[in-house]
Image (cartoon, rainbow, N blue to C red; front, side, top):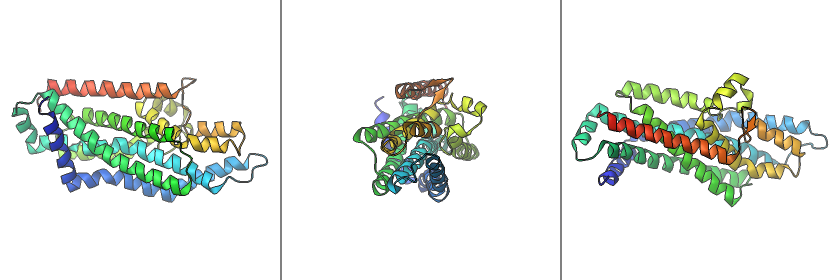
Length: 298
């Protein structure tokens, strides 16, 4: 592992030096931000207004509370998607090294294949974290101006969620990219992940709006629980403030409708269980990735 720091530095520097790879990783966050702000934001505002309209004695919610709710949902969804899609883009370097022949040169150096694999993993995680924490900072700034209901605990837990989801996205991309060897394959996988991951992790629309069969399928995916953790922590303060205005039953209904409370096979999943599922998936995927790296030279 003596060469690990050098490998991590080399891979991270190449990612930020390659303008094409860097800006490709930013495309998904920017598209999602525009989509959320221009379209989905109004959809969730209307949904919230319809819920409030059914509550006797309540005409409307304070604007800051509405914006805090919508902003918390949209940015938690944005972060949940970016932690995975950006990781896939940042991890393209592993495949590009195969295409250019740099991987062959690296395997000839006195560096173990396990060390080489971890070099790609750690550098991808670092690059992804930098981009995702910039997005998280933008989230805090937006909520601070529009409707701030976050406690210090929720801010810390949100940062932990982003780190854990980034580790998951990096591990998943490492396993998938291990089997890729051409630029065409990189583009195809990147397109599929960018287009489809948001739907199957409950980011683009609440899981409760899917059919029962799809809900069951999604509940088996680890990324779903990472998304739910972000929803819970970025919106918990908003829900607590809503309890001063709305009946508890109405607020509980919103929690369930907007995935802050997840149900698996009739069991409401607790936050420690969500962390256990997501953390376990990270450990398993990293183990598989390192094992693949040791078994195959290319």
